[in-house]
Every structure is written in structure tokens, then in C-alpha cells.
View 1 (cartoon, rainbow, N blue to C red):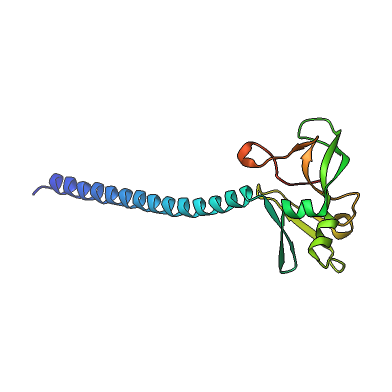
View 2: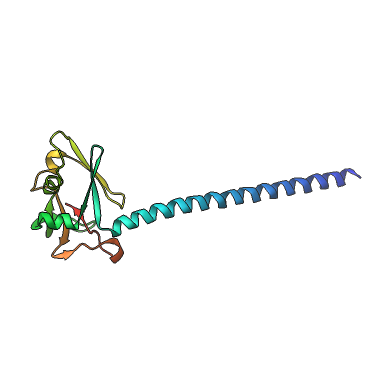
Length: 166
């Protein structure tokens, strides 16, 4: 065999090795993508189940408390008026129906006197933390279920609720 034949043979082996590496990388990417898809599907199903079950949780220390429509109705809703600003729109006075956050804590028997802050975590990723004084001020923090007399609805029917903190 001549030099040219050896070079061609070596180049052929290199190309074959590169093809095998590319195939292995692609197979690995497919497997990793599949694993992430399964993990994401499971998490998405959990979030959708919670969103459609129409409840949320309040967490204080290591204790979680479930709040649903039954609890809201047991407390008894009231109508309030608040200045509400939608993204890109001017603020305007809006009527809401709901309950004060403090009344929820009291109904659940949550001991909050020694707490400094409360954090809220929505299923859509929104998170906020406020001081306990503001959170339990019945004039400031409410969980509402209606806006302008209409139920907030849930994500399945294009709503933004069924609960919203204002």
C-alpha cells in the first residue's frame, strides 16, 4: 500500500470515528431531553392539578395551611374598593369581593404574633414578601375571589384566579 492509500484509510477511520461520536452525542441529547420532558410533565401536571383544585397554601414556619373556597365562604366575603393598576393601564378604582388575610389566619388558628414577614408564592411564579403588620392589616391585605362582581375564574377558563391577593 502506498502513502496515499494509508492517508485515505486513516481519514476514513477518522470520519467514521467522528460519525460515531456525533451519533453518541445525539443519542445522549435525546435521552437527556426525554428525562427532562418526563420531569417537566410531572411538575406541570402537579401545578395544573393544584390550579384546578381551587385552593392555595399559606406557610408559616414549618406548617402549611390549605385555603379553599369553602373556607373563604365560611369566613364570609365582603366587597371592598381599591385602586388597581393593570400593566400598561392607568390605575383606577375597582371593586373586589373577598376576605382580609388576617381573617384567614384567625380562622385557621395561625399564630403570627412573633412573625416578622409573610411570603406569598403563586403558581405562576410570582412571589412577594411583606411585613406581618401590613399582612394582618384588614384595610390593606385581602384575598379576593371577584373583581367588579365577576368571579376571577381559573387558568383553565382564561381567568386569573380563583384567588388573588390585593
